[in-house]
Image (cartoon, rainbow, N blue to C red):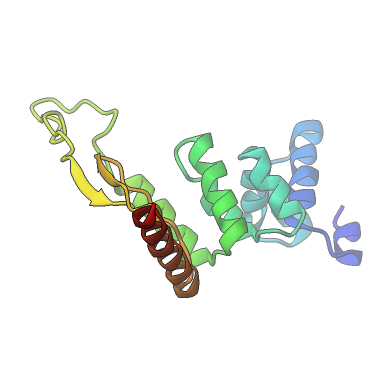
Length: 176
């Protein structure tokens, strides 16, 4: 059973597909597979969990874009939208396993009461109204009144260039 995996460098996705086939077609358990392949139960379960999770995450692991550990952590996120969002972020900016674990922890603990009814306990955010913020847009200089603030990631040089261009535009507007 394990000969092909010993001869080739097989990725975790393909291993998971193979193990799932053994479960589906032969009725083997993860324990049976672990014993037959001399792998730990954790090893087998990790690969089975990968292929039963978000397809885009499994594909990213299969293609070597992210590692198995990162993929397994991303699959713990509560919604498909969050899983795909953080996957794209991990791909675009790079992410260590520890960083992804922190993202998952933050997502799972940020509003632990959300969507759950607890007798005798009220939702602490039930009467919460976000404060309105007033600030100057760093790109165009327009005064904004909003309860939403967006972060733009940029290098110090890019920010300086944007602010410099904004100053030039202001001066041109004054001249008419």
